[in-house]
Length: 278
Image 1: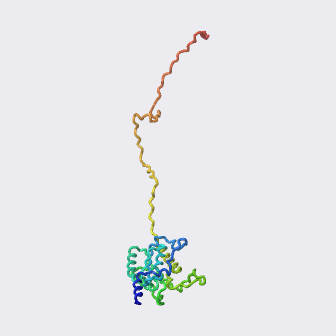
Image 2: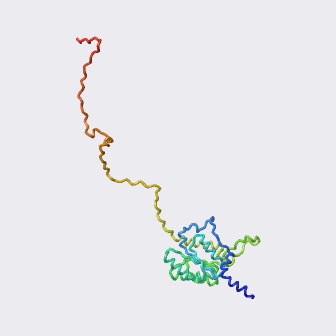
């Protein structure tokens, strides 16, 4: 009878997947604060593919899914979350992406046991000719992990003791506290390093050439003048009055009328006749 509650708890574990993500809240991007990723074109950021590996933890205490959502807010929408069983799937996806888009860049991030899967993905991708630009290992297990051969172009390892303490607002006596292992993925310093490295990778990708915009006229343009020789037509007879008259061009010669002979003046009646001149 005492084992019955534990049996019910084991049965409910699949339904409680990710139930402890609230331990570390989802990081949010403040749009009012200037960030390095804001200066990168969206077309370049869309060519950066990020693969996140979480350990086999059904409770997801580290909240690596929140890091994926944070990268989506920054514009790195090609960010994928998975665990160790997704290694072969991610490798096949990288091959398909590289064959379709030659300018694609890859980055792998692994937390704790997931760092081993991230390293294996970087090694297998390098063997296939798919160079990984960034490998970020968060709190990897064992000290021998840092002595292994690195295959990524840039490799960064972060542990809890490497990060600064966080501020504690609800406890006035202790203003700061040291971050734990599960808080490494969502630590502000980790997020800033991840944003910086991904932005630098995106800056190496040239944005696509924009097509020249077609000119749109508000009104129909005037047709260009035609280079033709004018051929005036003769006006009909009923419209000849519209033609300007130029008598010198038409060969007009004025007719000369003979001088008119005027009759001699007549004397008015009642007046003496003029005397003849002697």
